[in-house]
Length: 354
Ligand code: GYE
Image 1 (cartoon, rainbow, N blue to C red):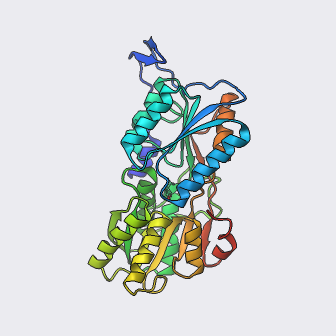
Image 2 (cartoon, helix red, strand yellow):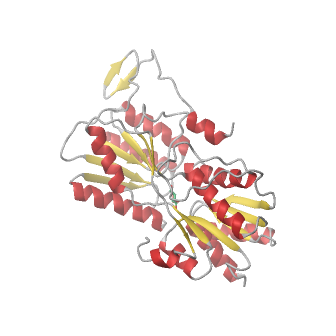
Image 3 (cartoon, rainbow, N blue to C red):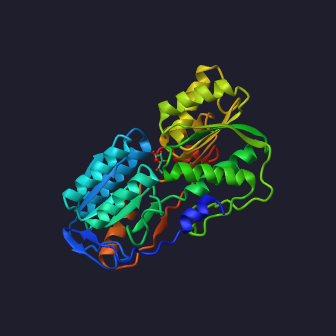
């Protein structure tokens, strides 16, 4: 069984018989197998400890959360961790110390931030993971936190692979620019792409209302599609460019790029142009997010395609908070619907992009 499936399907038994400290009181006996409750109020104080603000996706997400909090009369306590796990954990602890009502957590990476989720639970504060998830081996959705809202990253990787395999007629030497190591989108986008090319991709069972054009499983895969080099570019344009330069100089026959986000692919496009290469002709690029620069680059014929990963889910996130407070059962995985942008439609959407 591949790690993707096993990680998502893990079912943990609630801890029984151990003592725990909850909100200043010591309990022995069974730990509640549900996230902390949330009382119904007109106005909440909610925490949003953002990861970083170095790319348009993050800026659009923060803006969506701020706008929605303001529209509904809630107070949003915002911080930014500058891509440091230690800082993001400290920022969660700060929110716990302030006794906020609720935390929307975009976890930088799956494992270290899962511990922060457990800290919030112990303090009686419900958490919803937004845009990235934490490790289910450490924190159990539906028990330790409400769950996850975001995109189906595994499918995003497969959609990028499907477009590239078709565009390259099944033959390519691919450089992969990976997202931040240990983050759920980097892991699942890598695996979805690789599995699709191997012919082992099968859509996630939870992807019911996800994308309008879900890719199907393939049989046999694409043996002529080879990932010749792959490295972490931290979801960042400059780092993506630097990593691409080193990988491309070592693999000058590479003729395709898969970026785990648009920013890194745009960095690779800069590097290619600096080397006198023609992106879109000499090297075909595909990435994920659908930001404005990426759509413009598609219009300009440089980037080939971008799988949408919608960052504007403030409204859906606050809906979940209010439904939870009203006592509704919340699904542990909520997938945003995502579109697909290529030369056929990028011009139409560039103005509304972020
Ligand atoms: O693709 C990227 C951002 O976690 C889904 O993180 C998000 C990703 C997004 O930095 O641009």
